[in-house]
Length: 488
Image (cartoon, rainbow, N blue to C red):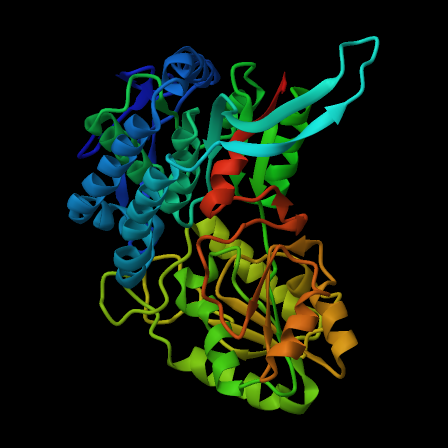
């Protein structure tokens, strides 16, 4: 169940308490308890995987119409109950009211509706017949063939804390549309809205065992899911360190993996760029969920001819953004997720200063906020490629600025980290920007914008992950290709 302060695990259609009790979920803005989440045991995670395995055969044989109707009903129900979900998501994540109302809940509903339509996409890929000579294996002739997309099976869906229900729906909706069953394992910091979402799926009619949920504050239940012999695919969004561990465990069982991991977005600002536009786009690191987003353009790599005006513009922008209570309508920058994470971000800021960076904006905690885990919008200028703040993902409201002298140097700086999720090019010459984008080693490139197209294949290179989802590519990610051949 998921009502009031009572939250339970859903395993095979039954709501149960966590074997290991509960733990408190803390509002990052107020430091007050939002609710208590169930702490699942490894045994309960394995039981959830077993329930999903038992439900798979019947669910995989449902018609596209059945799956589409349930996904569409889920999207409509989420929109109808948005007033229940939005305050809970804001309280758990610390996102601003603007982000909660525009991006957290409505975007999750949109993803349900997208994959309600996706359930009708063809799973058959026709192939040309092939004339084959007789062999000792079989007579020759004209051999027909198709490739067919089949559900993978049982999918463990494990997500990060920044966009809890959006990220989760981005996994479970295409997985369910393809005929898979799922075990939902939300981030430990903010699982309550996800548990409530699973209760909504039960309400609209998803059969027992098709969607299960386990939660926990430690890796125990997540590791048990990844290792379970009943799980055939692991879909994970989170840090590269955890992703590497998942790869080790899942690899031993030859499980399919979809890993969307860390990022260190390069914003390559060329000498002919629109400076005002570049400043506004890079500033989204501060304005969009306090920089807690893997696609954020956190490295401003700026041509030396316009470096000073870009840095000055960013510093001015950082100084005027309102940091404060997420529930106030004019708040732009809210808190970060936990006290420990704030300490981690502050450690990076100190490291940037010690390595020779210049803190030209922010760098501390806002003096007017007595409670909450806030970090000022921070800009560290005069950075170099090898500095920790340039190389490592900070996941907070921190931008680093690095000058460059020519395109080759700028591209080398952009490619010069272990990450490759989302990079950006800012230029007044579209052909030049397009040519440079071909040399950038990232799964996604934005040209003069940080806006997304939700139909594109989304994922990273290097330490930023394995595989792609998004749009129809999301359906492909949760399917296996099966070849069928016959004599003509």
